[in-house]
Image (tube, rainbow, N blue to C red; front, top):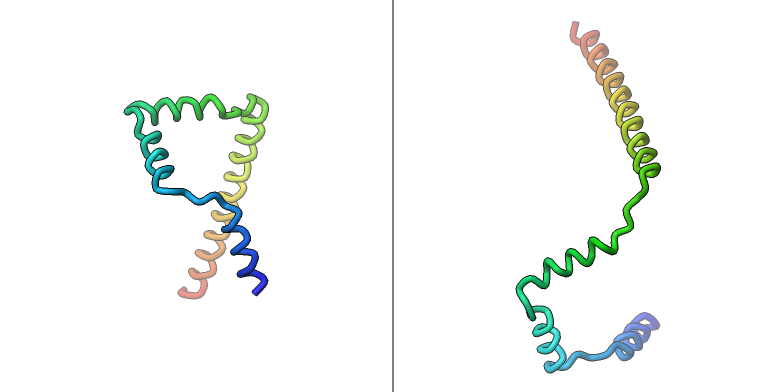
Length: 89
C-alpha cells in the first residue's frame, strides 16, 4: 500500500496538461521546416569532444584488446580442431 500512496503523491505533484497547453506545445514543435536541422546543429555545438591524447589512449586500448581476443579465439579454434581431428581419426 505504501507504494501506491507514493505513486499517488508523485502524480499529484506533477503539473497536469490541459488541451490548450498540449495544442500550444504542438504548435511550437512545427513552427518552421528547418527547425530540426537548427536544433541538430545546436546539439553538435554542445558536444564536448575528447582531446588527442584521450583518443590515442582509447584507440590503443581497443586495438590491443581486439588483437588479444583474436589470438585467444584462434588458439581455442586450433585446440577444438585438433581435439576433433583426434576423436574422428
